[in-house]
Length: 161
Image (cartoon, rainbow, N blue to C red; front, side, top):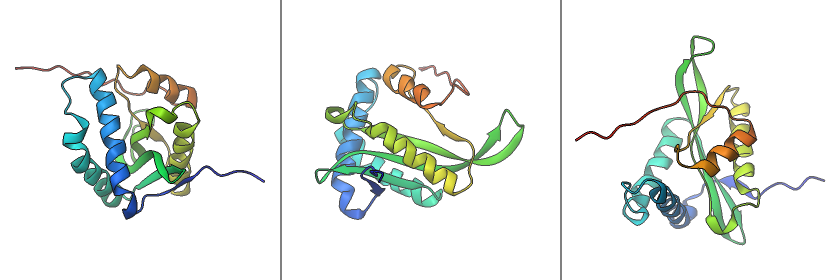
């Protein structure tokens, strides 16, 4: 008998904890990119945008729940784009956000959430699945590569005044 991870679709009752997770994720990103807003200032609006993207792009927002707490989430959107390898325009699954709460990292939560995103994409017949991470987020980049993701496009950024 296999044990299924405690992953389920987002429900309205999860909003407060989703906002807390978004704030924690943003504050972590802010430690790498100090110009970002503080998590508390943007988390509610960003949580709304995740829900809208999941709804409007036929995607899904999934949460990892244990001990009656959200320990992480993944948001998957379906996007249309150019496949540079095949020179075609097609739909793909795009993981817009993935988060495991810091106190619970290293327990397989991120992997379980990636598996849920992949399952969601596979059920819809989508290939490939894409994800991005900040260039300074070496932990996420290592984890995604270990999971089988490979560099596809490098996006460079320059601030101008």
